Image 1 (spheres, rainbow, N blue to C red):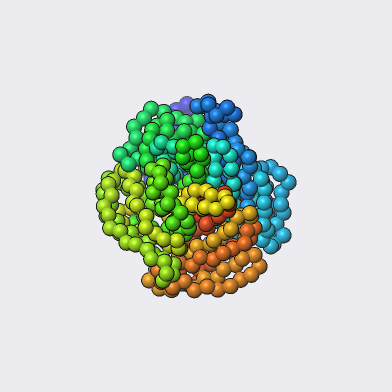
Image 2: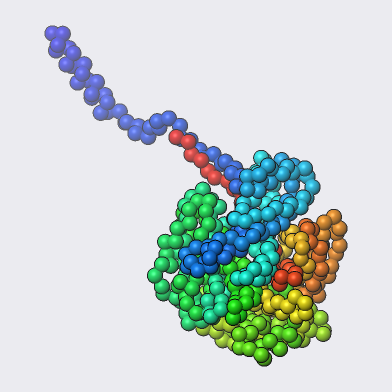
Length: 482
């Protein structure tokens, strides 16, 4: 009887469950909303390529050995907000006390400058740190004034300038300041188009190390070069060290730094021509001096040809420039002769139907007790509207070249050390301002944009520096915790 009653109860229970609706919208636990977390910018770090390199080793005959020549001088301007500290190559930190500080150091190899920011909130860019290096080299194999900006390493950059023609040496210097091993892959273009050569990929640069790549190994006797460096792994800093030899005599050297991105509107400040008459005399005496004249180099990275309109404009009514219209082929490097420019101050405005890259080879010859011929490659400049700083090197004469390429005047505030002044740049004009070495220079456009380059001169030759604004950015991320 008891079993019979239990069976009736179980059947009745299931009958009730079938009769009642079942709610299947059940929630287990609680849905967690994502949290927004602020991520500060990485510490600002700039790298300098180091002293010039001599190929051939100590004997000058080895094709695979390279050694540093002397030391380069680093000039830095540190914004030094409170709570920050500047470290150079692991040396004791320079503490920020709320006022701008000028810093100098010497280096043979590649160097790193890092601003430690405990708050992570300070505005980065050249307002926080800007640096460059300069070196006068006078030796049996290399003569010239070489300068390069100290920059943040990159995973993709272009270098426009140089040659591997007879009597010309182009070395690609690569430095890896990161903690990750890096692999560089090269694209090389010349006046004939893209170079197809073994060994262009898989160039290893270990973490914290540097390497030298002779470009003649891939592009032998090329008059005109454009090089792209794409990096896997860590990031790299790179320059082309260009050297000229006339017969047995060294005759000019330069560091060619990374170029800005291709554009359809290009400004190149600082074409300050000196010694043009003496250069003409040398060219008339020997064919080995034919390249000691000003020249515009253009590279078209796409697949469409470019129609160019080039204006070389004088900074004053006494400086007579020139105008050029020319079509240049896609995927190749084209050199445009700028001979005929007399001594004076000029700048270039280039308008193109497609995005291109451009640079100017600026040559200076000097006769007298210490005759020389030297050159420097001026990259196109990126116009800016925010304040930028540059530190002027000591031991050379410095000319700050400011260009307003717009159709309206631009006012700017110029801060040199502790002295502040205002200048006015008329439409389509250039001002060349002499600035003492070892000075922090701030350039602040007030109502427009300005492009700038710094030209250096000494008894060793001529060089130039770009006015950069390297920075890292912070941000926010959404974090979902399970």
